[in-house]
Length: 94
Image (tube, rainbow, N blue to C red):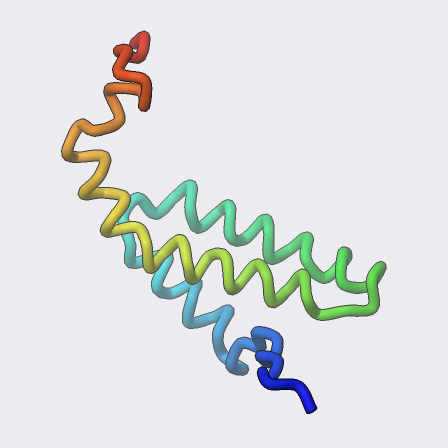
């Protein structure tokens, strides 16, 4: 008997796409993020039909949820100016 139990694959709740779209529309900057989600969500069914799997649809939701959740931390990082230097200490060209 295995010592670890495999984790079940990610499965979003039934209303997850609509809820995510509402959250994306309320988060700054709205335009590009909402249109990118719309494009990814529109192309996902075609990919799913070719693979006979809902994984592509689930991945679109999971990735966008993770990006939305990490957006505040990314905003703080960008506001700190930490991106102006590379990891080797050289200044980036502007």
